[in-house]
Image (tube, rainbow, N blue to C red):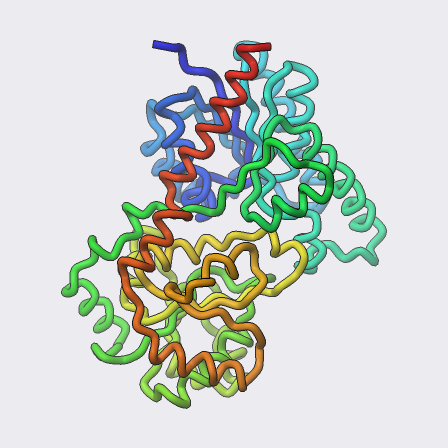
Length: 410
């Protein structure tokens, strides 16, 4: 049997974060049967205290995990401190290990990936996710009128091109992003791997009718009340105002509709926005739900909704919540122009695309929503064929195999 090769996976996100639990850890566990994986992550203190023992239990005997404390204050300086700590940790590791591949998630860790490639001749995978620097600007995190942020943006846009052209393989989330990279001169060794979903975990076939009824009763929902659901955080990109406006239009034709918002955001903040938009707070159900509970809560939905600000950087975006809904066989209402959503929805069998945020379009779409006859199997098949975790693991494994074969031939 061929000896397992060593992979170093670097992420600025934490394994104890919700994103780490859904979009990092499952892939690495799947890959660990074929590769020796060491992962260095940056963990937020409160999440680490609460969930680190769970992570250690899941990865025991499969993955070597080196958690680093994530510092976010003061801005910029803390990032530099984190980066120096990561570099030093990698330097220590390299004394006793040869890593055949260094797999860097997003931009900050890729600074180390470039160094690793130059210093140790490791293959460098730039898993860019989205257009991170532009996301920071378009999301209002970096104000370019501030000369420091303007300088940082310029630096990372320069490094972005260096990452793209120097990487042995680039991973993007969407076909749109791949075409953008092609226009920038990178037209080889680029793979599209969207945010995938564990279709064995998110499956309607493990949720019993009695459990659905129990959840509805706990939320004071009648068995026949229409439920529109939103999943996840509401900061920066997600258009709560417009989603509430859509719900208000839905109420005009479906009087008993309720808006279920599964989020950790403060209820009072959402209630305040709802009152501004003319939506009764009694029609909202806001609940924080743990990941292991998410399938059953999604299962009681008639539709989920997903409105995201349409900007340049969102062409490279693949919403995790989209795959979770589809895997549960629940149709989705989404706005046009985000990542590859338009292509996924082109047959009209998994939900509705909103082309314009206006009362007229909402009313047209609501009528279609209420007439929609979704097929659970057809909706779930879309998730399984394009967004399944197993597919994602296979695609990553294929990347590793090609790079390792290249190393053997060189």
